[in-house]
Image (spheres, one colour):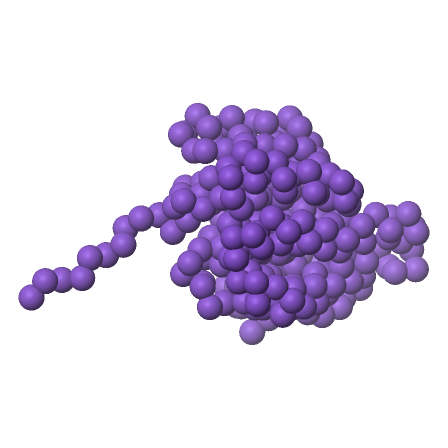
Length: 258
């Protein structure tokens, strides 16, 4: 009796993925993981130098990568880089919306300008990305969008209220988008990492002394995650292996929310 043939093709082979917020941290790790999993990539971030360096690194390894700069809080910029991905590769199959900023301080201590900026980047920016990605994807009748929230999107704690409010909002946007765009064949999911070793985590350690260590101590696996672990989850959600997964909030948190 003949044995079934295993599909050994990379899980994202033939797919074009837009990675927003790709210059550092989880976004840069995602670019490396998604490229290794077979995707062609359009990388986006505000900072040109680290983005160009990452694209050069991946290009030198033989991966198909393009890049452009843009601010997710700028509607014109988001429309432009969605169009650039489509023009460069002829299609857009997936998007990883990772651009975000953090903000420490009690709610009564956060300056209004800082509150407005974090809302513009984390909430409005995610909405703009979803809107423009769907605009490009809908002509193919398929697509997968992965947004980034946080375990801070499930609960509150002192000292990070503005940031946590935005991460609650991203979960709401994702769940609504799954309903809005499922009939178009577009899946929308959200990852909620726990403490993850990134430059943003270093900022949180400074903003809330001892807070990160307390969360790690309360995590069943007793460790912070890595950008690669979050990126591997994004790769799964972007791939056809998750073809019937939409509207899911998937913690990557070592069991913190268990």
